[in-house]
Amino acid sequence: MPSRWNPRAAFSSAEYALHAFIGTSLRLNARGKWRAVPIDKRYSKLRKSFSYSHMSAAMVNKNTIFLWYDGTALDAAHFYAETFPDSTVGAVLRAPGDYPNGKRGDVLTVEFTVIGIPCVGLNGGPEIKHNEAFSFQVATDDQAETDRLWSAIVKNGGQESQCGWCKDRWGVSWQITPRVLIAALSDSDPAAAKRAFEAMMAMKKIDIAAIEAARRGH
Image (cartoon, rainbow, N blue to C red; front, side, top):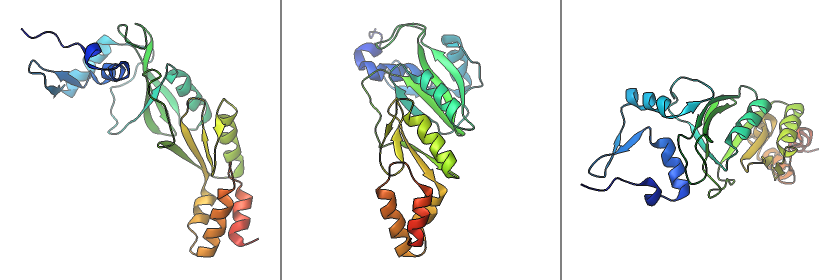
């Protein structure tokens, strides 16, 4: 008889945390090959194995953004829900047993939406860090909205960057992008677009009035 497969031995702690989540979708058979779990059985087992602090329907989104956190996924989800419109916190899954970066009962994953976009936050540990290779781009309609979102992120432990980019306290990057900026950069007059672009390059938070002035050549 082959020995029972041990995910702790096969994976690093970071990979094991991810395996704990995707284990509801895949199984390793006796031949050592992965097979998909039928969707009608997948979530019934999930509900029995994990404790929900929020009850919700089974995952129905075809595509979901999956973000890695170091034990702070629930804090981040609540911040996003309080800061952005059409944003909510959904199901919270707690670990059914100890794992390399947590204990039984700790929050393992959190479902949430950011401006209507479905996301899942995984408390996977400190091994993986966020960087600018991924960012949320939020279109703003005026300077007041731009200022509010920028301040909410930066003043809550975040960090300013360039050209309308900033990071929240968990390292996730955000582009707070006025619609006026996109219109200026795509102006049919190349000279106007170039002036707006050069003005943007000198900015951290986008100044709509300055972009419009540059576009006009003033």
